[in-house]
Image (cartoon, rainbow, N blue to C red; front, side, top):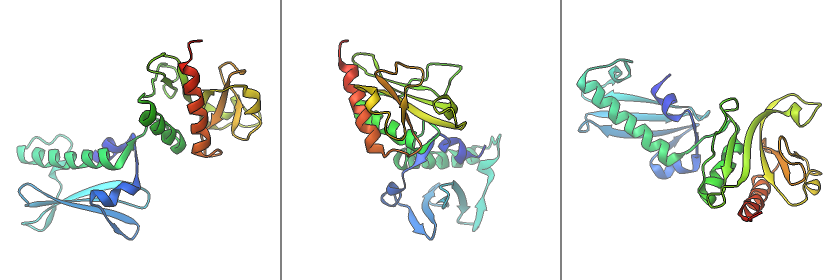
Length: 223
């Protein structure tokens, strides 16, 4: 695995932050340049139209690309120092221009980032047999208010068989919600008070967020 792939494999780009960070737009690409090693080397970071990130380092004295830092088991002190500086740049870009990706689908991750920012809780991955199931728990009551799962759609729609991600949330009178496209009787939970929402952009984020907020309020109740 490339150095870049390893650092960014569980993160998703927030394109709106690139320009303020220092990237420049070049046709379909974003470019970022930084001098390292007392200004003798220049790092060039490229984010292409497919949001794939790559990078090169140039030795400015010899006007040539420097690649020794990419050798898998490199041991040379200088090459290691170049690699460390390069990795620090990548991690800083990751932390300031990317968001942590906990799940597969984009909407799942947008919803997760909302929950993290508003309620200060991270998904808990509790089951070895279902590593993609993430639970959101109220920090005070310790009650669940959401569960994101990757499941076969055939489990909630018998006519379809397709892997997707859904979130279970608690609502008041589930029957009135499941009439809306994208909301179904709860998978593996009480169907009277819980619903399953598909996270494939059938519903707008704000619609789902409203239900998450409702579910969180229920998790505050003593009973």
